[in-house]
Structure formats: structure tokens, C-alpha cells
Amino acid sequence: MRPKEPRSFDGPGDIDLEDPDEVRYWAERLEATPEEIAEAVQKVGPNRTAVGLYLGAQA
Image 1 (cartoon, rainbow, N blue to C red):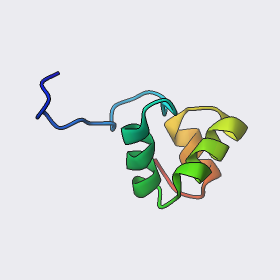
Image 2: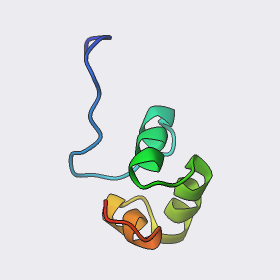
Image 3: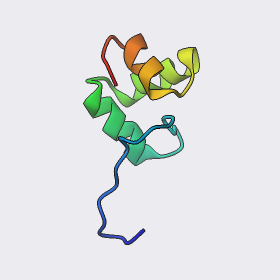
Image 4: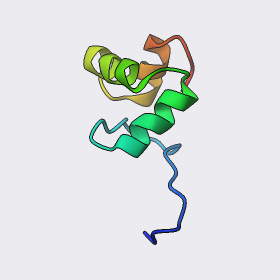
């Protein structure tokens, strides 16, 4: 990936808690804090849809 190329986290997959950019992206998209994202991943796993449902939003 080229440095100036924008990253996209919208494809299928899981939320990677090791990637701070991805956590911030999903926190903003799901209107949650990064800490709430981490808590949701611990409760329901990293699946984006499951995290969204846990937080009361749709991923």
C-alpha cells in the first residue's frame, strides 16, 4: 500500500484491536469510544456486525 493511499475498513472481516486507525474508524462509525469498541470485541468477538449489534448500531 502506498503511504498516501486512503485506507478502507468497510470490507468484510473483523475489527483488529491491534490497529489503532481501524479502532478509531469503527468507533466513529458506530458512535462509540475506542474503549467501548474494545469491550464489545471482548464480549461478542471481532465480527463487525456483532460489535455493531452489541453497541446498538448496524455496522
